[in-house]
Amino acid sequence: MAQDNTILLVEDDDIDAMMLERSINSLRPDIKIVRAVNGREAIDMLSTLKPRIIVMDIRMPLMDGREALAHLKHDEQYQQIPIVMMTTSDNPDDIEFCYQNHANAYMSKGIDNKTIRTDIDNLLSFWFETAKVNPPEL
Amino acid sequence: MEDTLIPAALKPYKARYLLVPVIIGGLIFAQYSFTAMVKQRTQELRFNLDNTYSMALELSQALGYGGLIHHFKNYLLRPAELQYLNDGLVAADSATALVASLEVNARGLGIETTLTETRSMIAGYRARLERVRPLVASGLALMEIDDQLRLDDSFALREISQLLDDLSQSVSDQIESIDTQGLVLGLVSLAGTVILSMLILTLFIQRRQRILHIRSTDRLNARLAESNASLSDANTSLKQFAGIVSHDLKSPLRHINLFNEQILEDIDDKELVRSHVGMVQNAVQRMNSMISSLLDFTKTGFKEPEREMIDMAELLPQVVEEFQPMIDEKQAQVTVDADGQVFADPQLLRRVLYNLLDNSMKYVAQGEAPTVSIVAKQMGDGPERRLQVCVSDNGIGIAPEYRERVFEPMHRLHSGQSPYVGNGIGLSLARTVINAHGGDMEVADSCQKGTRICFTLPCNETLDDVQGL
Image 1 (spheres, one colour):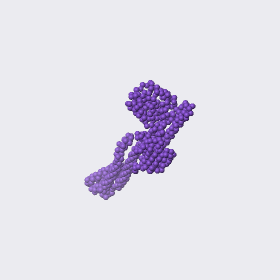
Image 2 (cartoon, one colour):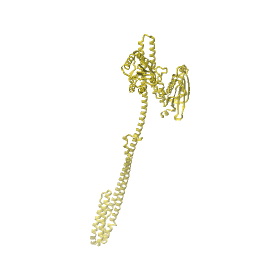
Image 3 (spheres, one colour):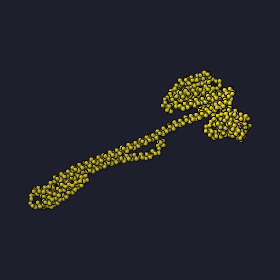
Image 4 (spheres, chains in turn green, blue):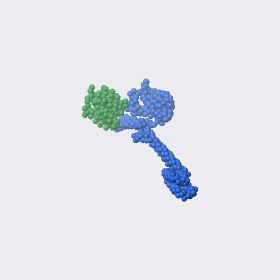
């Protein structure tokens, strides 16, 4: 069953995760947020979860966002799921790596509440309203 | 191997070196030729002189009683027989011819002369022969005629003897001069040989030095490249490390900013404000710890070890001693079995042991008392002799797939707010230090639960051993 209103949030930092969840909930209470704390956990969750998009951090323990991104985008089963990298890193190497590995977008984590809210608003309105995504199969 | 070390510009010298024996051989041959020439010339002169001497002797005889005078007396005794007159004239002719030959020879030996006395004596002789007959016809007694026509050969003989003396002197002068020339030429060619040999030797030595220089430059370059590589390694890991840390520092900074905004928003709710301030304090503490780690790593991780002989039985209890408050608090059990010595930097080694022990004390299941065992022992023999140190604990352990990754800088196995949060520096720093000492560190297999980390260090006795590595 397609879970069209679900976001998989891959974020190890509790505070960052809380801030993002709060912003998403305040803008679109209908969207369900499922959280994984590292890349490995996210990949494990995808066997049962079909999110509309994945929002993923880079620096995480055990398996970081770069590794998880490369893994998912090279797996036929998951490569159609849009992945938005949302990270503190503005390192050019990270940005290049992510786009080379077919990340759908690369965003910086906002430094204040207003920026976070604007970014999330943009992200949601694009991926949940403007963009046509390939509806995930069962 | 050698050829590759010689730059192309040096190679043509090789062909030129073939000329060396040729030139030296040529000089030696020249010297030999000079000597031979001198010898030949001297022999020639001596031969000619001898020749001239015998010619002079012949002439003296031809002039004296064996020649002219003899014929004169014969003719005087038998003036009627023209045969005797003829004989006398022939003798005069041959004497004249001898005089001419002698003059030619003398010229060949370097003296230009005309034997005037001798020639005039021969001419006088002819005149006297002509006068014999008229005097006999006049009836003069033979004795008187002989007295009148007495021929004095003493001037001629003196002249010839003088010429011989002169010739002898001239020849000996010439021989001396030739000898001198030969000596000079010999010396010159000898000096040439010596100078040329020295020149060639110098060139050869210079070339040798250039090759050696090139080789040593090559070696230095290789060493430079090596140390460059290690510097660049250090630089890369420092860069990588600094990048990671500065990136990680952004997180708490962002949190501080967010919670400050929250504080302003919730300014009237004391409880909320208190909670937000607590969050800010947490973030500040995290930043502080990261910055300390960064400083620590840059100070320790890139420090050149200052080695001295360390007795593990002394060092290990000192490290454990530092943990006494934590041991008491957690009711931990720490056992030490220390043996062996190692030549290492005591401060750095202490730091490594501290980090390992710190991890063992920290990463235990909630509510469990840490049990840590530290064993140090010597292994192997001779140059393979090593010190092995293992730290084993009863903690939460490290899954096999992460046994290498725990040594990457800032690679944490636990999430931001988990109870096991570290800053991902301890193990990476420890391995960096052990590697700098020429040793290895790894997570070892452990049959029990928990973690077992072992490192080995070479048992160098002195600094020379270390550099010989």
